[in-house]
Length: 316
Length: 316
Image (cartoon, rainbow over all chains, first blue to last red; front, side, top):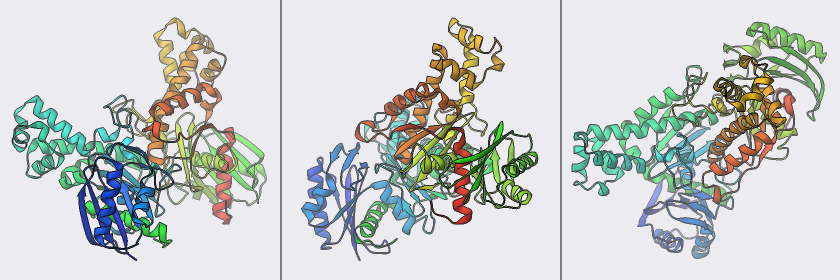
């Protein structure tokens, strides 16, 4: 049976019709409106446009989702707090809705159909605007007792470090995300050294116009400063992975999200740093650090699959 | 059916005969010998002394245990590397042996019979000489893909922080353990301020003779410097719990180990610091931080119960 998957990001919404094998049969993309109510309307319109009829709808949201799988307790990048999101959408659509943390949804997709297909214990880290995480153990998404597990971006890596929107300091997200990448690039431009020439040119000398994809493309084209900036994000990512390995000891890691467009420029430093920072690393297997393969579609594919499994009682 | 549980600590070994309800019917305690071979002999002698006959034997060891549940890959506090420990002990005893990380065993005991009885998702932190951890999810010990999960003591809390025996820096164990407590007390004595008078008296002016229990007792008697030192350990413990909550989101935490003898002097600061450091703490339930109730026996009770369940196929 088909299901609809929706990925609600900070800037755009993607809705897709997904089959049992994780293939996307059709997709609609719109900008993310400012308010939760307008977002519900935009999603409902996108789902109707897909013409799927009354199939289960899974929605991946960048935020903490409560155990009712409907309420978004906090989505800092969207500015939502305590939104009864799934209930509203279900009311608007007249179908059943399953709300999932977007990184959990992406982790599930990569474990079912992607880079970690066939593996049982997988930690996926999504390096986009923020850093999200999804944990699959014994082939089940681990959501936690209060539905808030896998918030890997908020693992502290630096005591009294950079301020984070979650209210804490030194969170991994402040060092290993697309936002951190852009902030570091802007600092490099502000410092005005000769090594920032490529970055300055790429943004037309307007540091405020710089984006993660611009830095990533510049790195891919060989600009040494951009390569170094991406490498620094990768290095911090490896520090986070080492902590996760100490606690969770997964079979493999899967790295996804927009910054993965940098490919080995991100993963190489992440793997080196992970290997160097793994506790008792000389005395244990090192979990491979794999690139996600489902790209932007992972969130919606996973959300659709989870909705199908949860709402129809089908087995994974 | 009865089972034998053995807890192999850095300084002493405890072996006990344990029933299905987690009650210890008899116990033998001996010092931990220097070598793995002598330790096997000492355990075999202790088990024979219990007179249990050929019942399953579960052994909890402070170290990384491989997936064969026999080989101790690395036990820094014991100085073991790649020891085929369970196999040797089984050969010596003529019975089946299950080797478990000691903190996993203690976590299982607290979840089955102790502070977290009836809970499904529990993270136990053992604050002793080092810091161990045990993760129970969906009422199963989570050992990880390579048998090395729950090494909470090696979660990095300070970038480029204190050196750890695991080869890394800034591990939680270097801030929130009995060893860290003693090191801080010795530093306080070395600094020679008037606030260290109680500590100096307690160790007869020989800082090198200071132990964790001495500091803990001094704190219990109200010595302000000792209270402050225990509080600092608790504060760091809370930082670690906040990171674990971000990743695992357990139903509750259970704190055990020797330093728990300080009771609320440890747990109070740990709870405050956990609450203050929890990411998005204003928008989510706070997992209660509970005191372990099984004391020193948790490790052997859990090891015995796991051996019975695993080797006899009984269900928990």
